[in-house]
Length: 413
Image (tube, rainbow, N blue to C red; front, side, top):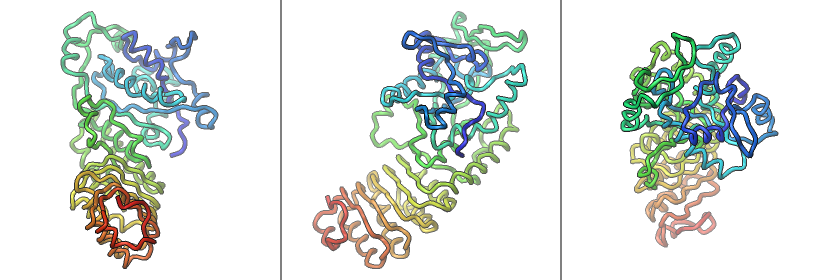
């Protein structure tokens, strides 16, 4: 999964800002070839060159590569109302402010040659990119930003009624670009989470070793204000993915078998390679999904699960799955509500028979004195654990008394 040198260029974020300001939609790749914009008083190409990508791969140029997972809202143009474009600029602009590196955007309509490809170069480039598309969403050096919402209905209906609000799209009849009103385009209002290719991109993106590299970027203001909102994802095992694909919608149903086969191949490749896994923001159903996936991580050495929610059933399933792996370093921290207590209770029982874990961080789980006592009892049997961090767990004097001072790492807050 280390080679990203295929024929799919990346769009420069600053050009997308220019599109937003001028109220223009994203162009096809064919037209993007000659697009430029002004930055710092100079005209620059809208597309990042292959030389720049190669320099990035060689480590001589800094850049953050962001792949966009999104729905196509019409057959002719994925984003005629510029809803997705605005979401991309809003979110990636934060990265531009935080990092000195350039932001490069992969968006299929503008990065891959579209219909109608009129020469062998365009066709070869497109096929090569399609055969390696998963790299954009699963590579450890990229980010995925997914846009789940479609253009709001009131915005869509307003543009539908306005014949002067046109989109420049390719017209197959005349084989030229034409400006057309939205009502003349073939709409597709199927929700993002029901589309087969979107579901595949979610799965590819969930296979990275750090799941924070996969983000849902179009959440509403009310959603972003919820501190306990959990949106982290873990990879789905191929058997479950196949079942999900039976309900998914494809423009071409024949694509389903190819997507299923590719997901299985990439899942096997990525999980076998993975030695260190960092997962944040997991709701209960994703904890259960992790339990199903863990037996496939044959070379996993460390696992970090931060900020999660689970019940007793999910905690027991995860700890049972951990027993099948030789994980040496384990962090399970930031359990919400009773989640941390459920998890530590299950771990305490597992530690009585598990001899692989050496270092444990169970901080910020609010396990109370009962949880501390259960762990202390388990360690009377388990001799493999060397260090255990129990800070910020409301253990108090009662829980601390169960531990010899020499065993304590961190604080019993």
